[in-house]
Structure formats: structure tokens, C-alpha cells
Image 1 (cartoon, one colour):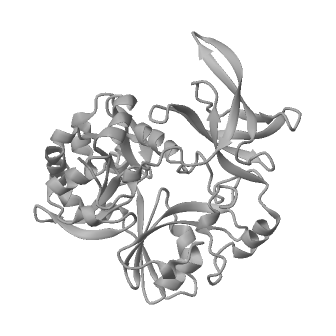
Image 2 (cartoon, rainbow, N blue to C red):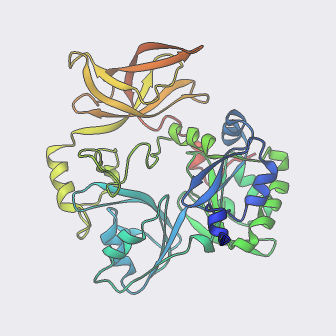
Image 3 (cartoon, rainbow, N blue to C red):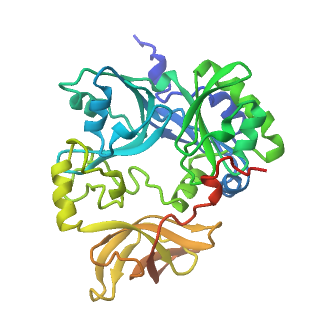
Length: 400
């Protein structure tokens, strides 16, 4: 006797509330999984979508971003113990980029914290963290609830994004400062708007109830028609985030909860995130280990690289003349930047070869007409971010 499969097993990946509109605009049938959802990797071409980020307005379906509501009389104390930043300084209506670590001071994940009310927070992260959050809540009067499916989200990014949102009817959106959020309304639909994003450009993120998703998408496409609005997939977004120097989980670091081999987990100090650590606040997970690492100095650091030529150094091993051409690190992310006109990369390099201006050699393999060529490309350690336009922080933006 054959038992019919339940709907979940027929289609194991969920669709977001925007899936119907995304499917109609999809020309490549290119999808990737993200946190249990099926999401678009490329709509048309990566090049078209990338240049839309830097020159127009783009929509990226952010719904799979995992969202947790943390509320209760001890919510502030709990979040402050969980993350390395001092959450007591975060005011209602503000957002903060944070990381959290295990007791060894190794990174579990990064994300954003929204302060909704005095005792009410929202944490957004790329991967599910409920087990860690619940274990960390022992002894605190706090309730933790995953609300991912209850909130649809769109990233509206690009130099004309503020103009489009104003035309949509989000009154006062131009007064939002970076890392602020506000409850607004568009055509009678309540929308939470935050001036946040993963592109390093002017941009906003819209958070709404799922039943309002399709109507808001349609209104945004109408409002942005004169500004070249278009949806983008994860490949174009990845290019923009590299230019901005932002880190990607499972690319630039692996969660300490997932690593199997020794020395594969990373600390915030190694990842160049020391500015996220407040040693003056009360105790937090990993504080003792990070204090000791800060005293002796990290063994390696994530840096920006300028690579010679125009061939991205994907996954390249790095060597140093000073070390007798011995291996000193590896590239985690790489691209030719059309905006910067530079061959750029993020790389993990052993100390003391990570200083600004230091020269290393990238061992790059190129596939040319089914033949592999090896190139040793001179690379220099440079400052991040590679691209940081003034419009990203201008308030109000000059978005015309």
C-alpha cells in the first residue's frame, strides 16, 4: 500500500510570501536554499543586478533571515550577556550590528539587534540559533520565540531607494539615520522600515506582515519604475557586500558550533571585529578568553587585499617573501570590482604579515579553454571597506 507523501516532503523548501512575483520575473530558474526557504540566486544576469545596486533601486527578498523575539523583564540583561556589545546603550528605535561567542571566545554568529521597546528586542541572523539562545537564557526571566514566518521582509537598496520609498508614501523615511528604524504606513499597510542593509550603499529594509507582501511588492515596482527598480538575487548581493567589506557566514567564517577540525573557528579579534567588543560592560560569553587573546594578540587577522591583474583570487593560498615564500594565509572572498576598478579580496593572514601595506603573493589558478594556468599575483594589504559612498550615511539622502 502506497502512503501519499505529506506536502512538506513533496516540497521540502518553503516559499516566501514574495515567491509568486519573483517566479514571474525569473529568467534563469536559478534558486538556492537559505534557512529552509527557496530563494533566487540570479533573476537575469549577475552584471545587470549588480549595476542596479550601485546605480538604481533593487529589491532583495529578506524573508528567510531568521528572526527572534526576545522579551521579558530580563531581556536587556540577557541580550547584554549574550553579545559582545553593550546593549544598554541601544535606545528604542535603534539597531545594532552584533556578534556572539562561545566561552572560548570563538564566533558563533553575527546579526542585528532591534530594540523594539524597553524590554522587547528582535535579533536577526542568517542561521537558526534557537538552541544556543535557549541555553544562554538559563537564569533569566525572558521569553524567546522564533518569528521568522510571521514577518516578510524586503531589502530596498541603491542610490535612488529613498526616492522610491518616498514615492511609495512612506512619509518621513528620508529622516531615518543609519541604524534607525521607524513604524510607517504605505497605502494603509503598516510597515517597519530600518535604514540597514548588506550592500554598503544607501538602503533600507522593510518588515511587514506576510499578507501585505504582494501588495507592497507591486506598489514598490510601480513607484520605482522611473528609477530602474529591479529584483536581485544572492549572487549580485554577494558582490556588493564584498566591496563593503562585510562578512558572510560559511564563507569568511564558520560558526564555532559547526566546526569539526581544530583551529577552524575564529574570534571577533581575528575577523577584525574588535570594535564590536566592549570589555567595560558586565560579563558576556567569551569575555575571559577574548581578554587574554587581546592581551597577547590574535594569531591571524582578516584583511582586505588589492590583487594584481583582473582575475579574482578565489580560494587562493597566500605566500610571503619575508617568510621565504611559505604559506601565510588564504583568500576567503574575492572579486573584480566594477565600481572600484580593482581586483579585491578578503583574506585571513597570519601575524605579523597582516599589516597595512604588507605584500603577499596569491597563488591563483586560471582555467583558460580547458587548460589550467598558475599565476603568482602580487597582493597588498589595504584598508576596508573597498567602497563606502557618502550617500550611505547622508541624512536626508540626495537620491535624485
